[in-house]
Image 1 (cartoon, rainbow, N blue to C red):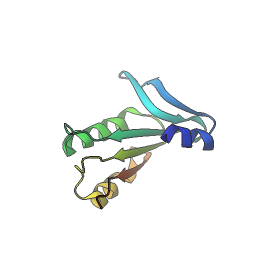
Image 2: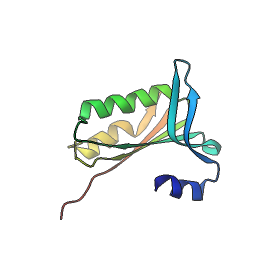
Image 3: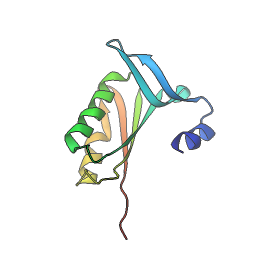
Image 4: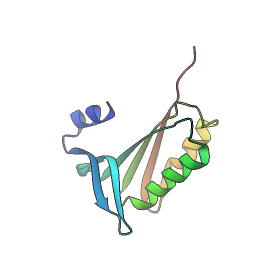
Length: 109
């Protein structure tokens, strides 16, 4: 669904684009060529812990060469206890790359 929304706004968006990072091949979930932007969608699982999620995000930041990387994290299992602090940490510039993170957690009514 995320790709369908992005594609309607940016016709040059591509899914699952493989690129050579210099140390191996990386595959981005969505790449918007005109914006030099990567969107990575992540969904937590019962086997995911905060350390593992953080390591995955940090590895993605290092491997992608695009100027902007957006992470969309659906934290289904609410492993991120302090959402605001986690967002503040990653909504930053790392190695000249603008990083944005959007975290969505289910709401229990």
